Amino acid sequence: MAFPWIVLLVLACLALYSLFIVRLRYRKLRHANGPFLAAFTDLYRARIQFFGPFVPALEQLHRRYGSIVRIGPNTADSYSSLRVFIGGKSIGSIIDMQDEDRNRAIRRAVGSAFIANNLLDYEPKLSATISDLLENIRTHHIHSNARAPVPFNLYRLIQLFQLDFLFLIAFSSSPGHISQNTDVLGMAHTLYKRIFHWYAWQPLPRLERFIYQNPLWSHLLTVPSPWARTGAQHLASRLSSSSSPQPNDTDNTNPTTLDLLQKYILASKSRPDLIPPSSLAGLVNSTISAGADTTSGGITTVLYLILRHPHVHAKLLQELHSAGISTPLRYAEVERLPYLGATIREALRLSAPLAVPLERTVPAAGCTFGETVLPPGTVVGCAAWVVHQNKGVFGEDAHVFRPERYLDATVEQLQAMERANLAWGLGGRVCLGKHIAELEMKMVIPTLLLSFDLNLCNSNLDIPFRNMGTFEMELNPILVTARERGQADK
Ligand code: HEM
Image: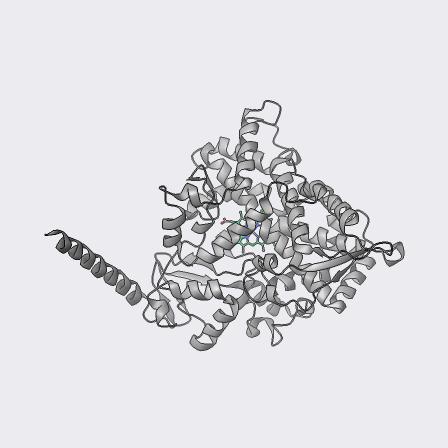
């Protein structure tokens, strides 16, 4: 009857080992302030992040414990729960790549696709998709005297628009969401499920990996990704097709002929050590899926805040009218409009699409924040929503939507606000698609405002901006009605 003793011995060893690890993790950061429970278990953070409201909970912790708060023992792997699987195998992603050197090199290899100077390459494709968007609103949602107002879900429509645009720039072909007015491949829906999964499991990456990424049963649990499947199909047909531009093509001097997939293929040809062909599907998929929910949420947020603040709406229309914008609008006409730029910036400050803390690991040299010394390996994170409420930087009215704060500011204040701007992240892992997203926002928002008289149906809706960013727009849809603007309004 030795069996129970062996079991007990193993259990005791496991318990001792867990205690040892917990104590080690606790001791390393015992000087950091925070709730008692958070020093020992990630369940504390999981509770506030899952049941929320997360941002107010973080703000309250800062009021109580100061500018640095310990919200967990020390767990890194912010993005592992975003992994996408095909046939039970993770296809990899640029976002959860922890090898900084490789990430830097890949960003350099495909960087030309994302720099501000090459933005105009995207303009024709964007204009075409905007034209489909206008057509969609006119066909399905317009409110005229002859027809009763038909409220529509602004976020859903912008999401369909965004999916079409991203596919166009990535694969030179659009699934036609906007023209068919539907989530053609079920992408919007799975996007929401993935984002929800990420938010829910981000604080518990080990448990998430054990449950959802376990080779024994993960194929039963992982949400299929029509994104990844479609991307992989495009890649396969591109590599086998003789008609499309091939990786060996020397005519890559004209960037307008190359879509994102082709740029990645060329980068893979010249640096197979860095971008092996097997990593192409994951890299392209993660690059564009990073721009889907963020940009749809960003555009929706800006429009929502403009519509909620009639004086901002009026001032913006005035700026657009005085600029003599043509139809269809060209990027050069709106790129530098000050009030438009300030309005977008202010909306992303108050409601950055990524609401969860952006995490980094302290390097070997360690680092010091104020008087707190953080040892190498410590995971640190900043939540844009919390940083963006700093009154010392953004003023006493930091909670108010006021685009003028950037136009009235001194150079020093502007620099301080820029340094604290986390909407796009900061440093080496700053958003790769920032310039593309800005191009989109600066073209889509004025076009919609100049073409339609948009009205919010639920203008008392505050919830989306207090908890988890764009994800909430799925649960609490922002409904609007649209009426064609008369020529006289323009
Ligand atoms: C309003 C729109 C957008 C916002 C607010 C946004 C925000 C962000 C943020 C905050 C990060 C950094 C995450 C971190 O620091 O851990 C990021 C990363 C990234 N974004 Fe965006 N993004 C937007 C649009 C786009 C678009 C349109 C694309 C591509 C077409 C894109 C591609 C990426 C990629 C690939 C990364 C990962 C970069 C890396 O890890 O090296 N984003 N984005």
